Length: 343
Image (tube, rainbow, N blue to C red; front, side, top):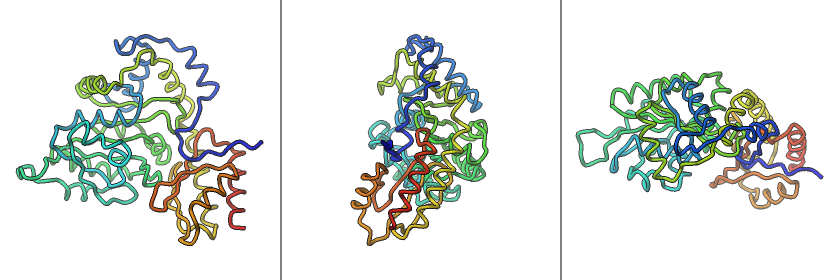
């Protein structure tokens, strides 16, 4: 029986046998007391990777992002982000609920904004009628933008704008591993330009749970208190940290395979008469639209009968995400079945 081909997200993966073995052998303690040796090792390793003083383990990327925003801002202030930003669209309104901060959303390109857009969006600091702008949040790769990657030189220009205007700069790097593999970049490059960075381990790297926030020691000390308030303290979290350490050793370089497969799926979709548009593919996310006369529900039913699962992002945009559990056999099968949809 053909296995289900699940492309709704790269969060659906299960630990590999090697990862499970590493988890079972982990040395653990109580991380709330900072006494879990494996968590401590992982936090030190990731902080060093990015050239930062400290790091803190979180159960989710949303909590890591929300904590960063809370540390960077005060209630009544405003942050700048793209209109597609995950922190605005997919974190349950947490920016306003947790931090009392508003978002000035910019119309970027596939979720990416420019330094000139940021500069134009900053409220005059002496004009007390408008919120005080204090933070810029970028996302790399962009989820709703179809896995698009920033040009690093543009990030550096945004950093310069932030420096001139005394703004913090946070990166939602949930899929930063994908961006670094696709663009041949290094973690320390990002550590040099961002005040804080969140990275996720439960997407392309295939871990069951976990994200990390990196920054200065003073920043992470404050983040630890916020994590406690949000209920993010975990006890014997070393079992999860062991999965992260294994993934960093074994699952980063293979992301290139996910990117290749996503590109090949996009190429196939571009040949189908029922497909109206396929967004550019750089990493493991591809977004496409059906022609206006094609019924989306019927299309989903056809895929379901073929054992294929994808997701709708609304407004006619459909998404596929390649990942660790999407095998070569599944890939060959998917391409054949997609081709038959036009018949």
